[in-house]
Image 1 (cartoon, rainbow, N blue to C red):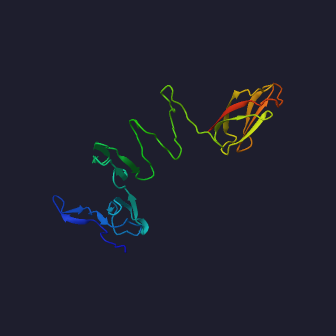
Image 2 (cartoon, one colour; image 1 turned 45 degrees about the horizontal axis):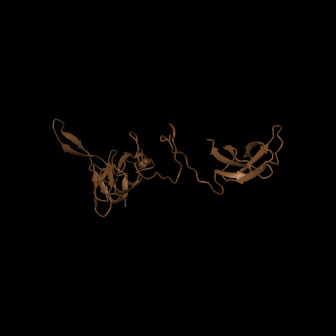
Image 3 (cartoon, rainbow, N blue to C red; image 1 turned 45 degrees about the vertical axis):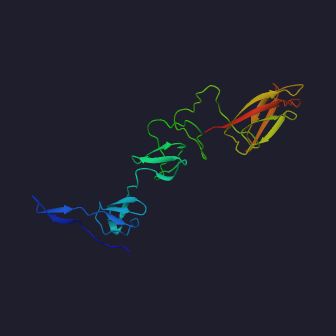
Length: 240
């Protein structure tokens, strides 16, 4: 039940002013404030103790209280910190975790505060060992994707419906079902084997039919080369 209390700041005696306004103490409650909690003056602080979240009243206009959430803990919520059996872990300065001892491995899962995610504004995110695994897109808004070690490269899974693979022409043509290809798909082709073809043509890629990559072999006059049964590699990249 909403209680309408402290409609104005309390006053205390003081010098040189005879009366001095006293700021209301924060409200420590077991819930978050609502628009019906109008019994306070703007600037009132409210703490939702179970959620660890603080609010400030910014308006009481038209009998509707507007409470602005000013967040909770300054550090991300930690879902789990797991160490090896002989290790110890320590939380330092509110947001730095360290481990000592043998088998001092820490599995750390972060739940970001709000919808902003985990942001690194300075420095570099370095993964010395293991992989960076994403179940959604990896997006570089500026800059480049760099592979800085010779011998390393881009790896793409092949298989049914994959965007990279190898196939062979049948009577100069081959249709490959790839659900994700369409008008914005750019296809790169290279011939990988001749397969004793008595004649070879120029390989072309057609994605005008959504979900299908069609590779054809044409001669210099644009006629299909039906005797071309060579094999080819393909790579599909989407334009954005």
